[in-house]
Structure formats: structure tokens, C-alpha cells
Length: 177
Image 1 (cartoon, one colour):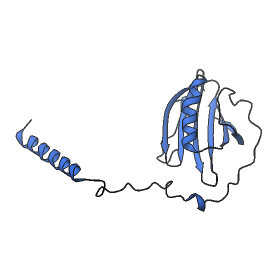
Image 2 (tube, rainbow, N blue to C red):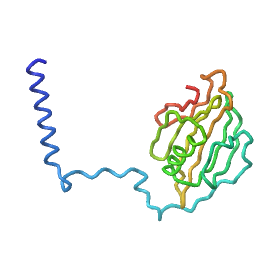
Image 3 (cartoon, one colour):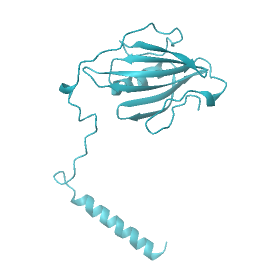
Image 4 (cartoon, rainbow, N blue to C red):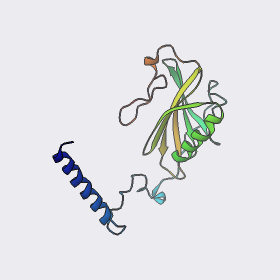
């Protein structure tokens, strides 16, 4: 390594370490609160839960949902995937823990997951079935989540035709990918 690059790296490392050394709890900046942390529960309106409709027959019986979950809207199939909107009466953190713990116990394999403030999304499969969901927080008192779930009991023949679940960054959650 040329001497000038080594000296530059040494100087940068020295500055970084000395800055870290001087930071104390009194001088370290406090992390900015997330938008969710800024919500005052006392300011939230009472929840106005959507009406319940009959569960679709295709919803897998061995895909566990938290107690109190129900179907709020049955959507038309799209590109070989069945679709439904569900009310999940727990927080997104609780839902994430539930999915990560309970779905594998029933033989579901979890794929790539993602989380943003106020939403989570995940893929799941149990050959030959595939699916994905996106859940968003509903900020009211006591709060709940709405889950958009897509599912195919047999992987559709055209993986490019699968309906995506858009995220704020524009990357679709595609269970056939």
C-alpha cells in the first residue's frame, strides 16, 4: 500500500476513535424518535373496526392467525393468486413474532421479509403452495393491523404474472420470485 494512503487511513482512524472516545452519555445526541414513537396513545381515536365477512374456503387451515383475526374483504383472484384482506387484532411487532414462531411449526417456510415503520411483509411457502402478505398498522385505540394476503395452492405457471405487493420503496413482494 502506498505510504500516502496508509497515512490517510491512519489519520481517519485516529480522528474516528478520538471522536468516539470523547462522546459520553451527556454529550451524545439522542436518537430522533420514529414517527410511531411520536404518537400519543391518548390522541388516538377509538377504533372503528371493518365489518367481518365469511372466510374464503381456500384460506389454509394450517396457516395460523392470531386469535380474533377475521376476513374483512374477499378479493377476486389475480394472475393465479387468491387474495384476501384480514383484520389482525394485534400490533405489527406482535404479528411479526407470531408469524416467525407459529408458521414454521405448521411446516411453512418463510422467505424474504421486510419491515418499514407501520408495515411488514413476508413470503411463505409449503410446496407446492406459495404466498405472501403485507400488513399495515391502523393507528387507533386499541389498534390493529390489516393484512393483504395472496396465496396459490399450486405455484402458478407464470411467475412474472404474480401480483406484487408494493412497498414504499417500490420493490414488489413477489412470492414467485
